[in-house]
Image 1: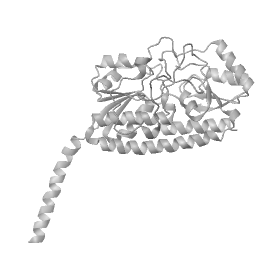
Image 2: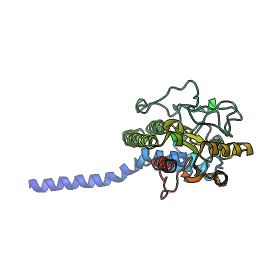
Image 3: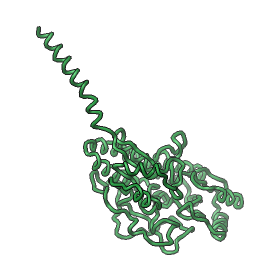
Image 4: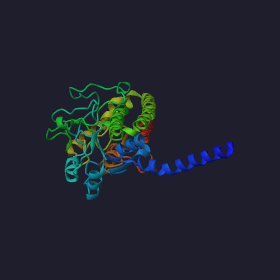
Length: 347
């Protein structure tokens, strides 16, 4: 009799759990999140996991500088609970899109809290990313100093400080490519995590667990890249790329980047800019130039032909590759860029 009662209780408990399962699934639907470009989309997916449904506006291989939003983008933004943007005037089309979509969710600016690289009046094509001055009033955040749970989600971004015409070809007064430093990437991740936790507090512990694992990978890769670059001779640390997107990489890893094109792929270098770069490559004995995945690389090929420099490989600046490519995730992109540079410059 005791055995039969035990079996009956077990059966009832199993049925109750089975009936409850669909209700639990319905109560944990992933929240809709929109990220403006592929690097942010990858970060959101790593932190949000199964709890988010991510729409990325500018996908792998896309150029956010010249992007034109579609009606489908406006619908996605209108339905989103969270909108993740870079800020620093990177997405020049964003305000028009959010106005058209009547977005009412939580907007998080991923660059909030970074130590942004400022451009002085007149900076244009020939920015040398070596010890640039940074904008005043921002406290520098080391990786270990940016703690979980900080409220960054609803802060205004640096765009309010960057309304200076003529800077950086449709950008503001600050270099927006801040993700090119893994130290900054930790701040991106903290801002995104805080926003997801605010939008979906039920799953906040999962977001912060994912954040901890992700940041550990970032810190390990940061140390790896420092070691890779440290192996390069001091006279082989100048890098020539298509457009000026690697200032934060240059600063963090002690390299010098030169680019005939400005901050935006929309800009056109002048003949004097190109001539000056050719002269510099010859005088400094720069042996390799690097093309970018999102730019028209005919100019770089012309410069290589005229100077005798080789094309050292393809770098990924503003967009990931397809998942099957060498830069399918943010971490893969950073590792690929570092190893590509080291192989060409060290040979």
